[in-house]
Length: 407
Ligand code: SF4
Image 1 (cartoon, rainbow, N blue to C red):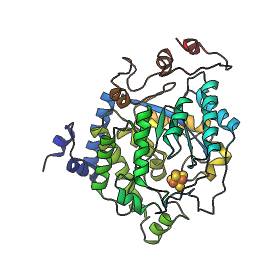
Image 2: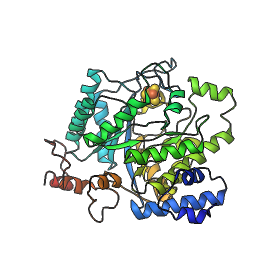
Image 3: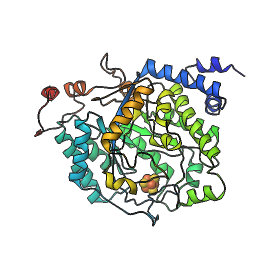
Image 4: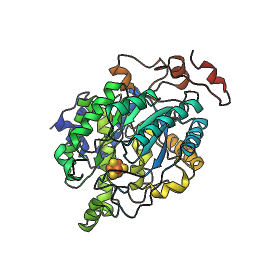
């Protein structure tokens, strides 16, 4: 077997290589893995953590994923839906505090009223920020036409987690009711790329019965699919769900088991960074759900994106995808100070005011970010060279950098 040192110097990784990296347990070996991944991150996308202010605007969902705390059949959930004005107020806060981007997330709905509502909100966000806010959507499976409408209204990144790249494993964690079909999800990712989105996906890590080989296959799926951004995190039990209750009942939710899932989560980030050096990788809140320093350690293992929650505080307790979700009681201002400190602790710089687009996305389009902008295209750069022209009549107070709009 190869020396670990030798393996960590490679630039191409086989399924066996990835399986070995993901399976590392000894502290020294894992530290060597994280150091190598961090060095690759520093060299390829820079030591910068980009922010996406996360607005969870509705927990109404038409789906029933067996692990999810807001699944349709979960009777214990108090349902909510934010208004357009509420969402725009939160987006304005994100813009004014220079997070650079928002993520708009909710349960999955495909009805025409919802599709039109999102379109309206997107145009509103572009208008209030003079086109400066980068927008990622995380709104599940939709038709190609819907994706296109939202793209034309201003969204440019879309996160659709495949959850499991292995269709058989996916089927184990989703109801077989015709409404949860792996192939449909996979086709949605193809459609998103075709339209021009930066396409994001990810998986749950540490599921019952999931092997290190399955996780290695997940990374190979990201590569095969040409994914630009990864949002993956350790599985955390949601009480009152079929899967969460089964895991609890079988004794699979011990402190030791949680630790195992956390380590797997970090190893996956590091292995993904080594195998796909230029993608954006999020250090997800789920990491922090299992370890108070989870997100910083995620950055140290190669992640370069954070998604601080800016959801309306009164709705946060009702958007619990899993138990003991962190940051539920913090205000957005507290989160801002907290994540900035976490980024600096990790040795990175906060990427304020930048979209932090995926370098991988530039590469597959045959373009490079402007020199000096490292992993992300900054706002000023974005506005000098708009991706596409969105007509904006900006009523917001002009700031110096807005003078570049449309130039
Ligand atoms: S994981 Fe997403 S689609 Fe599935 S039930 Fe939860 S919110 Fe709905």
